[in-house]
Length: 304
Image (tube, rainbow, N blue to C red):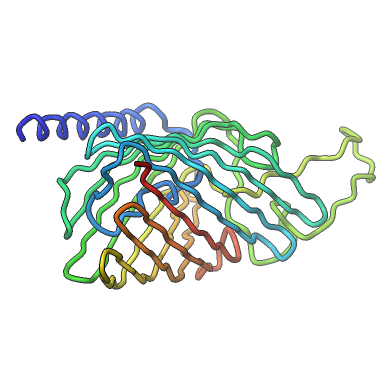
């Protein structure tokens, strides 16, 4: 028991040191990545007991009426012990902007997560750290930066109620390109519906200007918040949960230029001994927004 406690403390100290180091070393711009959808889907305390876990995710996002992208994500997680897990998420991305479409490899995300509390049916506390690598096969499928996102996740499960909060802070290493919220009008160059002629003469170059990526837009710096609150029902060896999900983004721009973005929608979850799944839909509540709708499903399966 003492060895397990000492091991847990060592993992916690390591993750905290990495997170603090990132905050001190990298004060450049921040970018959002797969974000909160990489964090655990746990409906209660850490329950995974298998060494390897596979994850499959599908996510579709509508940016404008004729601008959208679809992500199919496969992942593998390795758990050396009950309090530590690490793994990779590999996305296949398809984008559509008016009549232009692209399909290929997106940015691969590596992550590590440590449980700070022992297994419990009433509470959970996890620290995580994500790194998104610039592995896109086409510039329109994602950004060409290394992105980082430390997270802390707190879960409270009194009786059959659910309250989970995840807070993250993203950072980009190198590069200064940003593309933030999508305005309400339809003339934005970031995933807009407006056609731009490639034949108009210019004073600098006659080559067409490539479109910016519409995948997971971001600003130079931002804080992320995910809040789930709802109810859980237990039947046999299954848990069914229904929650209201709020995803918030606080942009941290230069010269006090920043926006607050809030998205809201329902989430349906299902948990068994070896499978955890969730389905959610989000729509923006604020004037500033990054998409019109987002729907996603994630399924995690323990590998025996």
